[in-house]
Amino acid sequence: MNRRRRQVAQFFFVFISFVAAGFLFIPSTAAQNAAPQTAPATSPSSQTPPAQVQGYTLTPDQEAKAIAYAHARHELYFLDAAYGVLLLVMILQFRIAAKYRDWAVQWTDSDFGQLITFSPLLFLTIDVLSLPIGIWEHRLALQYQQSIQGWDSWFADWAKGEGVEIAIATLMVWILFSVIRKSPRKWWFWFWIAAVPLIILGAIIEPVIVEPLFFKFAPLSKAQPELAAKIEQMTIRAGSPIPQSRILEMAASAKVRQLNAYVSGLGASKRVVVWDTTIRRMSENEVLFVTGHEMGHYVLGHVRDGILFACAVLLFFLNLAYRSLNWMLARWGKMWAIRGPDDLAALPVLLLLLSVFGFAFTPISNAYSRRLEHQADQYGLEVIHGLIPDAPAVAAHAFQILGEVDLEEPHPSTAVKLWFYNHPPLDERMRFAQTYDPWSEGRAPEFVKDTGDVASPPK
Image 1 (cartoon, one colour):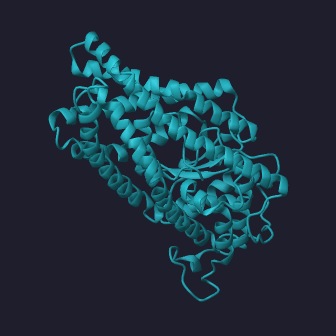
Image 2: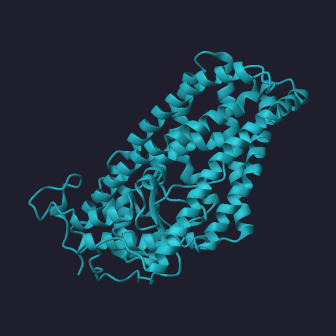
Image 3: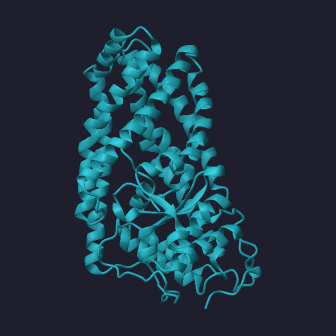
């Protein structure tokens, strides 16, 4: 249940990552997290409840491997953050952005023509110079058996990501500098006003336009008609019905061994997606729990809450960037050959500020996300109660499989949890799954109120 990670430029990443973190809650579609060949496969057709699991555990060899992989990713994370800041500083210090601006001015007198010349050049430069970090990350994924994606396919995905990024980033930069030039003192507010509907639009069109660029999708009913019917039944029970025509299977196994399911889109684009790797490794009941968790994000209003959270944070960041930009240009603008806030060459300064703000805000964003993910876990337990036998054990075993597949370390420190975990650690989630039982105490569940009206669990 990780978020997407794609090769995008700093500005696009900061803007879109808050959208993803705030309300999409969709697992990674990059070939970065996959299953080690350690956990035995589970038959998808098996309906026998798994044995009770007391907590998330790995064998000594698995644990050593999980810890080593976690340490490597953590080191790479901080290296990437430091390198990103250094890269933007160097682009400013060596006046690369100013040179791109001058080229654009020489090329055309049109403001729009200058922008569509400058913006792709800048973002492509940032991404190409950042490519070694992405290569290192994928190499780690291959080394720890988290990816099966070959380098040709990986570079093809990178190129497709570049095309999507440059198109969206250029649009955002055009809006940004249009409002800066028209309202030098309130541009941060007017840009925010323009960004809010784009966030919503992005949530609607992303599943239809972007996701199919990276993976193939087919109706789940074609390969797994019984599972598709049960998921449809669960969406009806959740109060957010999705027809089988929009319950899809994603061919994740072409690139990853990771397991997951997710719900994406808004309105007419809303859909349930189950990865083919999940169907192969988990029982049908475990797939229902994982899908029920994702349904919880929609039913509990996490989409709405996430949009509000993302927009509030974005407004704060833009106001802070406005104040900081003026100060930085007053101090270093001549050194960087930047003529003012409305100069295209000032864009790397904004990218630098937003990158630093986003980095510093990470623990708060993670804490907010962990709270919503815990609620989704609770919802998943409630929505499958009465639909399948021994739901707590099913949920706990699903978490155990996910941990083995994703190679999650069993006992992360508090600092690691605060900085890196946007979901609660698996041991906490498993223990909660086994102890949450309001029904035996005569209490009504908090979120799903109709559990007494469902049919008897399958035998």
